[in-house]
Length: 124
Image 1 (cartoon, rainbow, N blue to C red):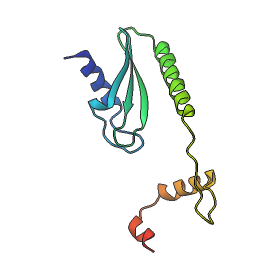
Image 2: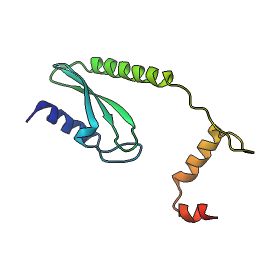
Image 3: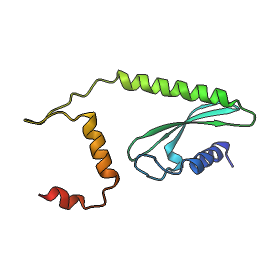
């Protein structure tokens, strides 16, 4: 069996689904970024919500610390690219207030235990 297929299968065994939308990952969601004899770095991207995870596979007698450094660099690089993107202007509805961090926490807490019917809730 191809080593890339084997490594992707191992990654899929560890990361079964997206932590954001819970979609099951497949082999096509894993993209190899770099491949060294003892360390592979990969990007696992959800095709549904586009959440991204960087993964390092340490092979044979590879150095786990090297893997941590590689992942840290990938994360820093991704953060730089994200912060370099233009800021999307926020629009406040007429007569409304901007959404605050407290508003987000409140709705998060409400939705965490919500077992009702959204259609009925928003129908009125």
